[in-house]
Image 1: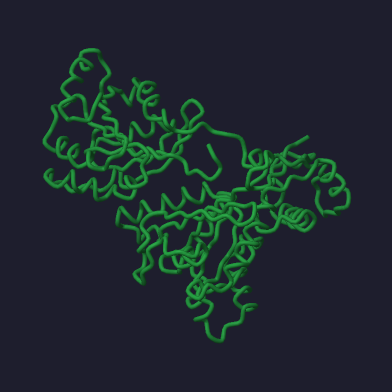
Image 2: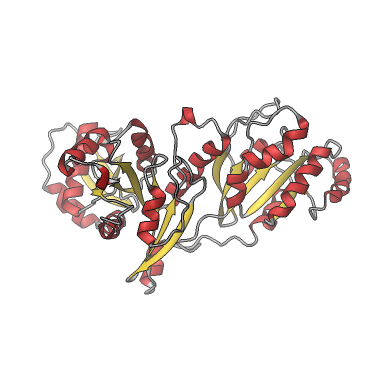
Length: 436
């Protein structure tokens, strides 16, 4: 898959209790959804990443909170699932093959057709030959050839997935290989932050266009909006994710979906811009959002936006506050910008490049071992040698004389020394230990 291409997304939709979550879990190969007999038990849309014959794709289970009134179900499912359906590369419409086709099934089919998205009718719970003979009835929904499956027994998946993933690209090698062939370097950048900190305005300032909808109403951006821009030999792909609210406040299913999609965009990014509002300072939910990027091992830049409105504030004092509130992001550069006045934008580009290069740096085992010889640690663990296992994030394996992890303070010290010696600016470092 080309480095700047997003993962294709397959969205599972259907009435309550037709087996969507069971299908999701079976396709994913793990139990990420709660499955139970009570209709509508899936309280959250769940996102996962699946792979079939070398083709990776995102998978979304749109369970959702559905009203008990059957008459409202089709429209409500569509309303709740619209964020997912807008980004879908393929829709799996699941119905229960053991039951007669209901009016709700027909209504939902009627609502899905105008979306003009690739769509497969998945007739679930078909686990015996007798039931398979009934499948022809489902042609009456006008959605083409039905795919009989049993999610519980994992039957019928190959035919379904061959069809669904046919247009999806195969995984290709790392970005570096494309660059080695003389192509432009591609950097994927996710813009994240609380609602209304100015993410969309910043995206507009960066690309010099009104691509994202900007409004003073918190949370106007419901979807990820992306834009590519080339500077020299680098193509930057910016993704403005919907504002992430704290878990407790995301009662609306659309908002919950926004968190899942934002986390997906973080996972797909090389560099993350965490936008903080200068007028409000660093708040608790900034730390939560920053934690998502840190956990995913992404290079992070803290952009303090609306600096023009922060009268009387000192950059040095504000940076200290950021360091104090976001201790785990001690590696992240802090930049000051005013998206509305397009100030501080040029510096964002150069910092993205620097952080991407740092996250992509490889250090030879020889260099690392010469480096280890210069270190003096007060510890009862002896470090024999270090090797770098991977990049983005730079991951090191430390071979020691004892089993178990390094002590937190020793690990911290080692990270800081590696950062200083080899210039791992803006990127987290991962250290794993092995007993020699």
